[in-house]
Length: 103
Image (cartoon, rainbow, N blue to C red):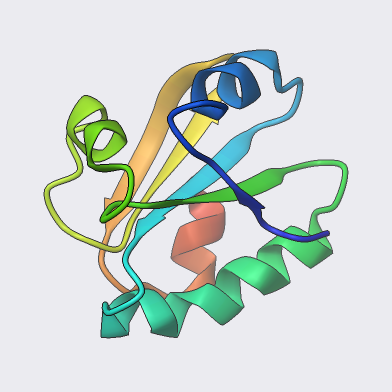
């Protein structure tokens, strides 16, 4: 399953209406650590299709979303359940740590 891009126009709707956990990667195209975890997030999306929604937010383009969710460094990956923040992690971390966000 492809990773869904979130914007200020669709963020709240996607998060609030998802019946499955949502993993959101707050990233920037110029960020090297962001580039390192991108393939891991793609693997997670593919391996968990139907059980987990993986999304991303470009913090350069959608700065207000980063502010709204207290993103102080990138990459920051935040998991949401039932429309609310569940867990978060910042930095280029191994796949198992990304998966731990949805456990």
